Image 1 (cartoon, rainbow, N blue to C red):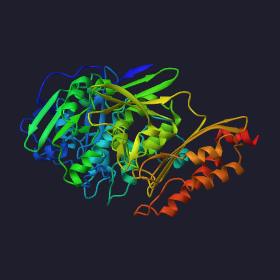
Image 2 (tube, rainbow, N blue to C red; image 1 turned 180 degrees about the horizontal axis):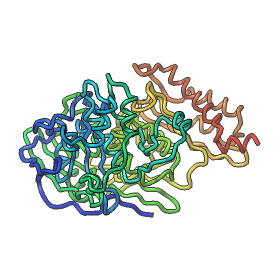
Image 3 (cartoon, helix red, strand yellow; image 1 turned 45 degrees about the vertical axis):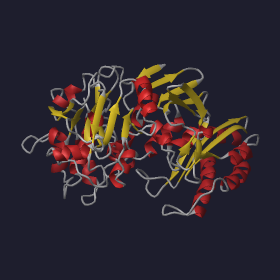
Image 4 (cartoon, rainbow, N blue to C red; image 1 turned 30 degrees about the vertical axis):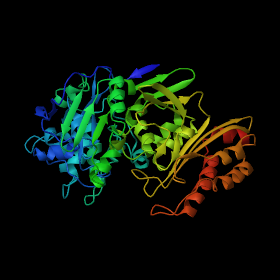
Length: 499
């Protein structure tokens, strides 16, 4: 199986412009490091706000037209405070002002108003944009939900609305029940709705872009060879995909890139290929796109995605970016380590494949050479029979991990034949729990083995004390996590071993 989300080739051009709320806008004179939020507000579109400047509050959310297959568009909510404005060259965006007006409210705006979903109003435009993205989701289907079932499921409405669409939007004063009520009261778009009609046509193709400004230079190449040539010329260039990490550096630390290279729309980095031996994921696919394309085919990743930040972040964040930053608390590396993934590094000299277990060399350091970028991530098949992703954080969703543990275990005839465990947050780099894997393999999958292995797991890594957790707490959570894996009632290996 081969899938590619946006096959149209990038068009020729420099900085042309984009469509904002249905009207063409020029990008001439733009700063290379300007965020989309600052650019919009400079043009009087002040509905989008800066709250946290880190992608955690959602006050800056806007809608962007993204590919949904070859011939359709999906309205996708993103954090405007993080993405460079230049990266939207040639694209179409809609802000809260473009959804409706005081005399002609959009359905999301109307329901928020009549159900008391807005108080101070600071966060409301962002909520409305995230809500609109879910409102226009093509596969949102109304469901018959019994009243008692609705009481148990607080995350999905009878109209098919997935409340996780709002997981990246925070409200300090209204409270979330009226916002949820507004979301669950939405019907389905009228086919004559211009934004609904727009979904039936292809999304804009990526645009070749070049910005040279006093604060730096921004390039969006058309092809991977062009990108690699630029990277060879400027090996210190910042690679920009979803910008969910780099955008924070720009906003919070005031960092500016002398050269920024946008690779998020390169067709060669946006494919999913599956054969009998491997699944290859393009490094520039957003996590939301991977989740849709895999459709649960990799259960460990399916368990990871809902716990990775918020929908707003996942709509931009990429596996390539999560690995490229080298953060020891990134959520994707533990899962990919457990899956025994490898990374494909590309340069003008060609491709080379590196096992992820050998990729990280130190704090935010890796074997990636100057002039190289991550082209793809490869996951070998077959997959393990028992998998899980455990994230310990102060909040259930939209939070940074204190500890992240990923498991991929095979049990045959009650014996552990293979164990792979990825860890995050307990060392200067993500790492494999090699000693714990050895303590499990070749032994019965029973409580005694798991308790002994849990004691080994508590000693893995070199956890530190910080404001998120103490070293002792992190170690304790490692051992508890393995006990939790064994205790899960749906675990087929546990059932086989106990039979």
